[in-house]
Length: 351
Image (cartoon, rainbow, N blue to C red):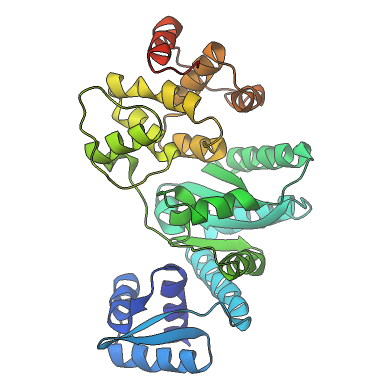
């Protein structure tokens, strides 16, 4: 049973990345400390016979991945999430009351499809919680406001930092199928679905059934995005630096690029942010961008830029975002509007 759990756990973190039994054994050993090829091989064969896994020969290797055509896989993955939740809370009893209250306060909010805790062990050591809420689309904005207030209340009650990422189900799937590195694809490699795991995995199954390719990736560190990748992605988003040779690089989501520029704090590069925001108004997922800014403690800097851009070139998405009073209780960093506008005009933002 434990071997089955470990196999399913690793493969559920590597959707879109089929792996050999050797690689699977290596990953299990990295995660759990021990793994024996013979046991992994035998259990993989058994799960393939049950059609829980796909198993194919490639040269001398056997390649395996989850078989989403098997409807019963969803139940197994839901059970997997419950076991992981139980093990996490057993080791972290101080989180049990928070989870109980989270369940109590959110159970009557119908827009919630599922809730995941992100990088639970790493964040617990830092006395913080990161949560992903996948939401049904609704015209009832009060539900989201209520949810945000609940998270604020929980944070104050337990003196623990709680950062929440709210994504509608369609936006979540949009991010999963993107060719760009983004947080949604990376969350799946280190998360526990706290509430409604069957709903979550059914959504993944339905997406794959539609022929949409999902490929889970591992966390991008905005501090470590290379100069070459930064320049390449800035050019993709409409900001080509004079004299910079553009080399084809890794496609990285605009939210990560903006976060990286703010973290590195280079004045020349920060000048690019208003320009790529104005040129990519409908590409930016502001919920994701705000989540990253809070996670990396650059919210004040980001908010100041968003406020300045909206004053220079008002945009519907920004106007709505700023109207929601997202900066309540936060300091606001001011930027030179005249200099920002001059630079934006140089890059033809107003055409």
